[in-house]
Image (cartoon, rainbow, N blue to C red):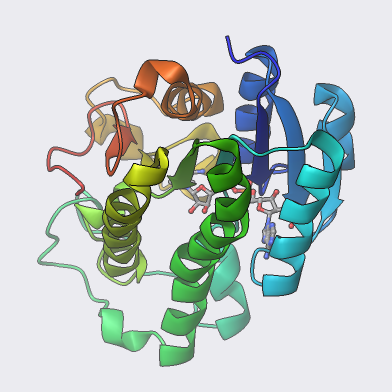
Length: 261
Ligand SMILES: NC(=O)c1ccc[n+]([C@@H]2O[C@H](COP(=O)([O-])OP(=O)(O)OC[C@H]3O[C@@H](n4cnc5c(N)ncnc54)[C@H](OP(=O)(O)O)[C@@H]3O)[C@@H](O)[C@H]2O)c1
């Protein structure tokens, strides 16, 4: 158990972020929970502090870290969750993705799309939300973790790093995040701060975007439960993972066969 320790979780009103918050609360963590709309419900449910702000804003992120320290006096853990790529891409009117002609997580020679079909502004937006925003959380919590003698940071990624999908920026963008995880683990290991990623596969939270038949490619034969992503995050934040840093833990029912780092 992690009784009394303090974590800041972003995107905590969402499917995965909410499951992560519930999992950590059950482990005894005290929580600060942030999203643009403020996380009022999940904060009430978990006894946490709800905070309104965007992970895309330096000011909001630093205000969230400051509010966490003001309320609880310390930060021992931080978890980044945020917008899904479909929501990031929505304003760019890039049209529906062409349907896969075979396993969407493998080389698909019949796929009609190209990653170059996406406007470059869309690439920038995905990079901002999925690489720069996690770095922003890390930067915001570092001073409190250093002052407190250490900490653990977990950044949500995805399996596309190892298995890129034809028209999506996710593959290269996830790889960039994993590069940052390694760099941060190197740099802050001496401060006893661990930095890891969790890469979910097909989870129930995103299932409205899945094509029929995708689960047939998963060795376990089903979509993952949000609580199964949360379990991996809880482990990496816990003392049981005290010698684990710079890693990406894949939670995908066996779908991905290539190490994502
Ligand atoms: N679900 C999957 O199958 C899956 C698989 C692999 C990876 N992932 C990754 O896991 C993350 C979360 O996925 P999910 O399924 O939980 O998504 P979700 O249910 O849509 O939740 C997203 C959360 O992020 C918050 N959010 C959105 N934009 C934000 C911003 N600018 N600042 C702060 N909070 C923001 C939303 O709340 P507000 O609207 O209140 O801001 C919401 O709480 C995503 O990064 C996704 O890429 C998901």
